[in-house]
Length: 109
Image (tube, rainbow, N blue to C red; front, side, top):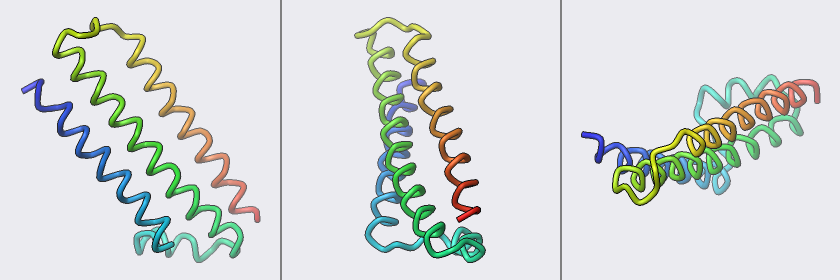
């Protein structure tokens, strides 16, 4: 069962990256997100679309990175340590903080 998780996470990461690329190419978010963006100014809405696309791509890369680390730990190529997981968690937390800061600034635009 544990060998399956890296592949599931890899597929999730690829789907997340594809979603980010779709947002870049079409400029459209989900219907619920578009409703939220209606309250923003044109500049704020454009910034939020770019932010969502960028963060989807970055989150997909982080998920794929975590999947690779898990796979290499399962194959005993790298030792099972906590440092790599803490680094990936730190990257995810920084992403969340930056997202909320930029989102609040977009509301004020």
